[in-house]
Length: 371
Image (cartoon, rainbow, N blue to C red; front, side, top):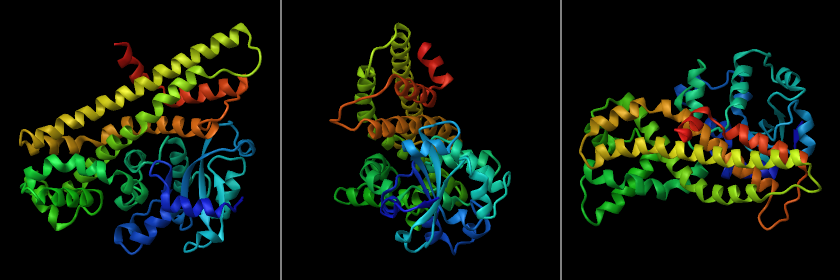
C-alpha cells in the first residue's frame, strides 16, 4: 500500500515514543558511518534497515487486511525519500494477507532472517529498546548497540526525572559542592541518557571498578531502569481512571443474562490483571531501588555493579507489562476519547475486554497476587 499520511509520518519521526516506534532512518543518519552500524546491522536488507517500524492501532477498514482481527499491528513504513518524509511512503503490516508479496518487492524471502526478525518485532508488545534488545539477542541476532537507543522525544520528556534519579550519586562519585551540585547533576543525567563513553564519566566508572565494555553495558541497563521508573510514573495516573471507566462501561441494547455475567466477570478479571501487572512492575523496580541505595547510601559500588550486570533478565518482565499497560491506555483513549459518549456493542465490548485481558495477564502475576 502507499501511505499518504505524510504529516503524521513526519510527526512520528520528531515526536514518536520509544515504545511505539523504531526509527531506523534516525539510527542510519546518526550512526551510518560507524563500524558497528555497517558490520552488525539490524536487518540485512538495505530497505528494511532504513525503515520506520511502528505499533499501529488498526482502523476498522484496516482490520480486514489481517487474518486475526487484532486491534494493533506492526506496520513497516518505507519512505520514498529518506531525506524528505513529505514525499510519501509505502507501508505494509507484518503478517497481512499480502505480506509475502511485499517481502518479494524488497527482495526478502519468507523464512529469511529478516522475515524472522520482523515476526519477532510483531510478537513483542512494545518496541522499547531495552525489552527489544533482550528479545533480539535471545533469538540469536547480534545487531550493534546503536539500534537500541531511546527516542529523542522520550529523552526530552524524561530528563527532569533522570536528574532527580542521579542526584544522590553526584556527591558519592563527583563530590558535592553547594552551587555546583545542580550543574553536576544536570551533566550526569544528560551524559547517562546520551554518551556514556564521555571521559567525564571516568570517575563513576572507576568508583564502580568496571572496564569500558562492562561500563557501557551497565550504563545501558541503568538507563533502562530509569526509563521504566519514569514510564511507570507516567502511566499510573492514566491507568487508574481507565480502570474505573472499564468497570462502568455498559454495552448498548438488551443483554442476555449470560452476556451480563460474562461482561461483569471479564471486567473484574481485567481489573485484577492490571493491578497485578502494576504490582509486579513496582516489585521489580524496588529491587533496583534497593541496589541503588547500596551505592548511594552505603557506599557499596560493587553491589550496584553486580546488579546492573545481571539486570537485563528483568527487562522482559518490565517491558512486557508496561507495554501491555501502554497498549490498554492508548487504545482505550483512541476508542473512547475524554468527554465523549461511550457507545459500544456487546460484540465489540467482549472483543475489547478479551484483547485487553490477554495482553496484560501473566501467570506469574496471578500467582503473586494469590499468594
